[in-house]
Amino acid sequence: MQIAPTEPPRAGGGIVLSTGVQITTLAPPRLTSLTPSQAGLAQVTGGVLVPNEITIDGFGMSFPGTSPIAKVAGQIVSIKTTPPPTDQRITITLPTSLDAGPQADVTVAINGRTSAPLSLTVAPWITSVTPVRTALDTAAPKLVLKGNGFTTTPQAVRFELASPAPPASPPVPVLETVTAFDPGGNDTQATVTIPATLGNGTYDVRIVLADNSASNTRALEVLPLVITPISVTQVLVGVKQVDQLTINGARLNGNDVRVVIDGVAHQTGQNINSSQIGITLGRRLSPGLHRISVQADGHTSHEVELLV
Image (tube, rainbow, N blue to C red):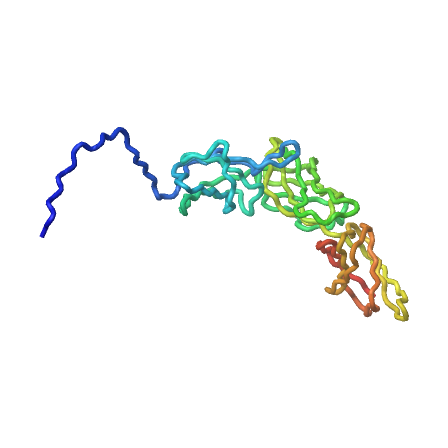
């Protein structure tokens, strides 16, 4: 039963001058277009590699208190603040290299919800390089690049040291650029001579077109070179007769150099002579065939055979 009387309706409520209703959907962003939809990952400006930018149009790319996350081929990329991002448009900076392509999915996520992808065509694109490891053991060694979007007149191929090695003597160039291409190139293949000045290390190889647009990278490892035959002499250490090896080649210098004999590494420490290394063993090598290689700052030469 009701004890209190029914409260009469209130009179004289305030007049509504404007509404403040704001609706935010919980749906994922919807992307409508990329501008441009085909682009190189970067461009070379004044010899410096500068990442390219693309604009993503759509809607639902904002949410109160949350920043959108943009990805290209699964990599998180930065969103430009100039121009400022809006609900309908954002501008992103492309990564300078991708693991797979040339079609790369572009997505935007907000509030834990990810859009359906749009496809960005990366051009130029390097699919492979041959060889992937070289000791530069031939005159004018060649590098064959395969991919697409090369055009028939590319401008250059860049060899950039990916992980600089410890200081060496002579110094290892960090970047070498080749502008001379072998004849017979086309939109899907180009051939250049690998610079003989490259030191040991892993290089990011990138092709650059006449409009300065740059491709993704592929890795090329340059190895120490061991030349046969290897000299073996007997020396007396104390009262013990042991073998001393003299190995000739190229790029044998480094801060941490080791001679590998039949899979066993013998550390020699620093070697400043790029063309020769000597090592005195604690024993005589057994008669027969042995396999020899040199490690210089983590880069291992091809094995050569030594018959004792």
